[in-house]
Length: 421
View 1 (cartoon, one colour):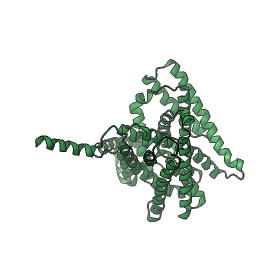
View 2 (cartoon, rainbow, N blue to C red):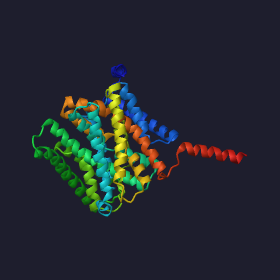
View 3 (cartoon, one colour):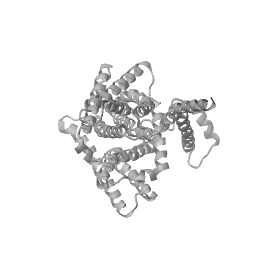
View 4 (cartoon, one colour):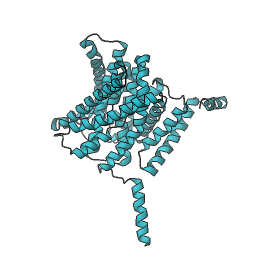
């Protein structure tokens, strides 16, 4: 890959630079791959995006730098912020008053996931100062992957909605705890107040930026139509600005967007129209995010000892998510069958886990290397495998409006044969 890049650089002099050409071509290939994967297998497009990113990452593509920094970090944070803002807008806080067991489910699966992964990593001789951050990385489900799966399958129903809510809440915990833990790595605390203080700083800055974002959008909605494309452009611009401000002030940009979406839902409870207006711009950002995540994650260390720890983390995380959702299912209004499929739908990991892992690497290169060698392969595997599991769960729950394409094709052939006979 490096030799090919150097050959191109000798005769290709694009105005925007060679990396721009590389990424443009890479996104074009990813678009085709995502379309073909969905059309011929029925799997979501994100699987095709991740496959392309994995191939170029393993081939040595240098267009994605680890740990995330510069424009790459900003684009990932912006894409995650857009997804989490929309996801936060799907969480009415009054729902938790009427059905508090949903919040119990969220806390139960998150706590169980954290401690299960932490203890298993210690059992595999991972140092405690790396096992804790790995447990935080494993905590985060991926609303980005899940919402893409829902969009591609045109799913709707109680399993779909609850899985998105629980995945969003787990992201909130992971972002807050991850940012605070990264700060403690740089400045170890000697007291309880010192340990709590970084969490309060992250939450305080994120809440302030999120509140400002929601108030600005609420003021805009007083004079602008929610169905206008100008409103969607304004939203993207404000999210981009809040991403930069929150990161600069010591908060979490995705967390600020998530909280902003939740607050705006309380101020403007009517159904939102601008997610449809954002359309292609939002899709391009999320596709770029998936390709970038898989390209970076493929740069991790791959060997037998690491593979054992990665497989253990993945299996324990899958079991903990399912058991945690089941433990909190009593009185939540969902059947045990629905709770099982909700747990399965929460398995994907992607950009949020990568952002948290990147924070640890920036905070400490020594500890970060221990974390990244296990976290990166796990994120790569669960971005693709998690999307497949979530798709299967949605189909098995009966909430997809689209038939599984291979089944549809067999049904069509059977119908043709019966007509011929």
